[in-house]
Image (cartoon, rainbow, N blue to C red; front, side, top):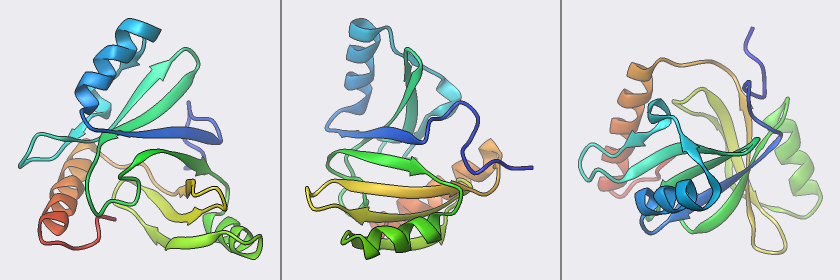
Length: 156
């Protein structure tokens, strides 16, 4: 059975969108002994930019990417929050005064995901892991996402 929080992840995961993600990863490796599993890296087939990767720093995972205009987490840092029911949590966040910036939808990487912005301007991506996907499914989904972004459509 698929768990709503994937094995090895905490409830809250930092997300960093960097001007040069590959350079940032190398810096974190040198500074903090960060480790990256090459299988976690998904790159844009047209530009080679990093669309998604995960680095491990001590006991914590940090999701990272290059900055992509039109992508919901395109600037600076945000948080990825795994919960048992993302729709319920998004509703609760809206009732608490947060702004829904992306309604929940099923994503190609297996998560159901929506996003809110809090009163500090911080984006919280709220997700429930629904299914495990193969590397082939990830690559195909990344190619489709890159095409939508190139065509000026919403990234996710």
